[in-house]
Image 1 (cartoon, rainbow, N blue to C red):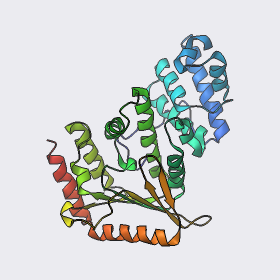
Image 2 (cartoon, helix red, strand yellow; image 1 turned 90 degrees about the vertical axis):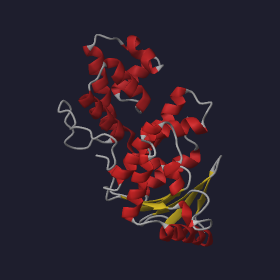
Image 3 (cartoon, rainbow, N blue to C red; image 1 turned 120 degrees about the horizontal axis):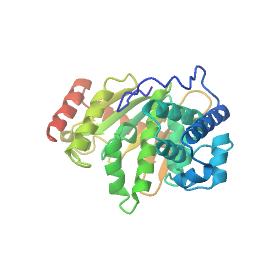
Amino acid sequence: MPALPEHQPGPVAPVLPLDREPGREAAGRMLGRELRGWREDRGLTLKDVAPVIRGSVSKISRLERGESPPKQRDVLDLARHYGVGPEDMRTIERLLQHAQDCEWYEQYSDVTPGFLKRLIQLEGDATAMCIYENMVVPGLLQTREYARQMVRAVMPSASAAEVERVVDLRIRRQLVFDRPGPRVTVLLDESVLRRRFGNADVMRGQLAHLLRAFDSAKVNIRVIEMSRGYGIAPLYPITHLQFGDGGPAELVYVEHINGANYVTRRRALDDYRNALTRARMAATSLEKSREMIKEAMEQYG
């Protein structure tokens, strides 16, 4: 179960017990069998439901036989069309997770630039992360409503469907908290708490979500007061990732408007690490950071 859920899910439905975690292919076949059962129970043909996923009869048939990788959008659209209940929906989501394995983000390739795909993969491999943000709440801690407002702001010409796919991607990235690692330190400029995305309800929900994160053993949030002055903290977001054996020990991710840099050279790494160290030293204590977030919530009623 995710460490930082917005809503606590109930137990998985007993109709499809998963005592042992299925492999990728087995999960795909199990998912297809469930979809076929729901369709047949409702007296629908393959031709009836093909338009639901904007596809052909053969595409539905392959999905039900588990012969093609399931796409989250297609599966969820079918489940909603069949009127699947909350417990069965949780089973679907669990099977989807196993059927997609570690490449789940490939389903979002149409809205995910290559540099971000690499970051998502690295997040899953990291043992520790330190994230500094001076503009927005980091994606790993965003609520769906906050993420939606932010995506609309940076993608004003995107369709509603495109916005929702980007939002889904952001929320699914948070599955990293459901795994053994990493531990995440988040350094937030105080202005992040004051900068509004959406209405007061959106901001209250986002700040409340940050407060819940203080109860997680995997997340350490610290706020840097704006009064600390220029030069104390970096002027742009920085993500520092550390890894175990079998690869690079660490790297830094710095995102720009149309791309990102992955820094691995020793001298540059030292510069970024020192910048994050200064920011960490300038940040307020755990209790003070919590109080600052509570105070920021008050401005939103």
